[in-house]
Image (tube, rainbow, N blue to C red; front, side, top):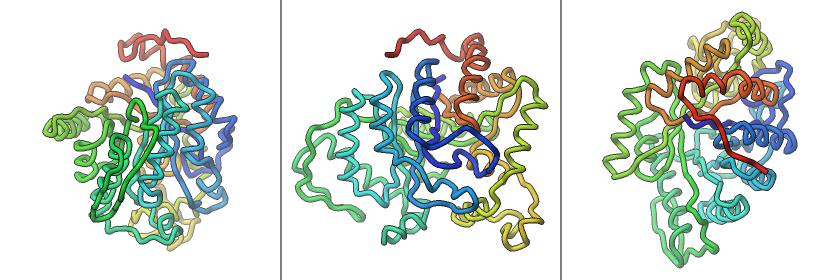
Length: 363
């Protein structure tokens, strides 16, 4: 099982809660998390991208570090761990991304990778004076974008004449070596097809690992049809405590301090209706919890692993049994909870044969 971290480069991440936490989107805090993760054997780090706040009292995910500058800075303070970036493809021209990525690959010594977002956040796209493509076309546009980036990394003086992107006399030097790892996340058939044709990794979400095996088999079959293999990962939020009661009490504190205005804004942007209306429609004082909102408040819709170290380790084992190659984790209070995970959960994964003891060295 490979282990990654969804990093806290944005204010308020990973959830939409005002509950107290030491987590902060500063470079020094992110470097501390990165160095601890590297020291205990994690495999990769992935920051989010955000150009516009979701509002609320927390100014949710507004203040933060750009994921490309973040990656260059963190790469210079680490030596082994994968340091990846996330890009909102409709906003950033593919040739610009190709150049930035090639530079970070040089800075990192070959440890950089790219997570491509196809454009669900319409207010961000409009902020740049652009018009978002229709929902059903997003992955077609993203596929062309990826093709341009990959071509820039492998060819010189090329032309690309697509429906959404055009390049004339494309030039990029130096080329990245090795070619960066590329990934996309999504549950739709079009996102899976994009991964099957062009990507190295695919992120897929599931609350129930028992129902995940069929989807894993489908994704792998689609990649195999193109003569390719994919690394599959599940993003998960971890809330581990010495007792189950303590873990659920911590969850209640996070959910109880929800930034409800930001919650409503996120639901609106994602076009998600909960019980037929929004929090603002019926008044925030009448807000009624749902499982979806609980996931959003705590972990921005990621599945929740809540319980003792033994329960968390057992659940992670179920994801491995379903066929994924690894998981990407985050926590409410990153530094303290990552250290707890390393002390209490990692040894259980090793004892279960889910992960070999880390024997590497870092500078």
